[in-house]
Length: 427
Image (cartoon, rainbow, N blue to C red; front, side, top):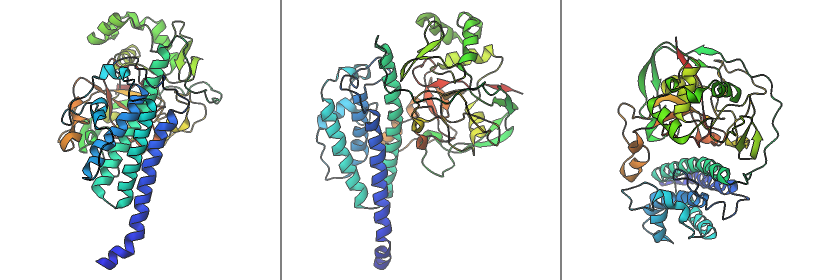
């Protein structure tokens, strides 16, 4: 036994070094997204649903401290009083600062939060290098997936904050786009009919809400080959879509009236320009429409004589497709029109990236669902009420974070996420 351990020691050490390196790369990516931003930029909270960038930096560090480092009996937190500030919604861990008031946390300073991150990074890296602990590795991977969620949230929240500024500042300069051509004609492709398997396949990381893999029945249906474009959504607006109550769910129509919606979030009233992370920009007619609520997506689908796909229909269509597209790694940070493309084996385009795709499915548990044990069980399960599922990732989703079984979820009125439309229909 001792000889076996000695022979494998270099392999174990290499795996530990790889794990530590991966951990630091993901953590550094968050800081890279903040490059060029000042303390003022990272303190702003533009609405209760958004959080300041500084809070994202601290909360993701708190997550590792709470769920990874606290397992080490020798670990001592440098700032135990911060636990109250940067707990998000883990009631079983302890009390927390009110979410709508995160923008009031001028202290700790940004420099202090950066120092805190460095402390956490060093402590977690030391644990990873110390030995091959499968339970530790699983917790760190969960923390990194959580970090990547907050990388996306950091950008969506920052975009809303910059949009609220009358100067409409840019986060980054836009990357030159390839010349656009006429969009791929919208076609409906027949989906799989009958009994299908849905959910995590067990081949890699998955959140608990993606489990267990189970069977569902799909009736005859079809799914659109591409996303709905700005030009197509403009036709809906010009045709009086926001003035036709028969197209809207009751709660959706009430929201339209209360909020005065007349077009997607960030569009200008002239329907010719929009606010982006690169500042104001002309509306690209062939790019996927984004920043829509579920209510708007559903109303457009009715207007178009179609419906939204269910999440089982979407996942079955996406199964086996390569995870490629306009994701965060391309650094456009905005949906892009199809310029050059080759059809996938099943003819579907833009399944990953550009915009999260609203589905017709409420966010509920799969049959046999069991949340993670302990406080981590609060991560997903307790939100399975009053929200709707989105699939596919967006232009600010890290590529290694997304997969066919990934279930995002938001309230039906949420608009500040990069969310858009793929149509479906019954056959």
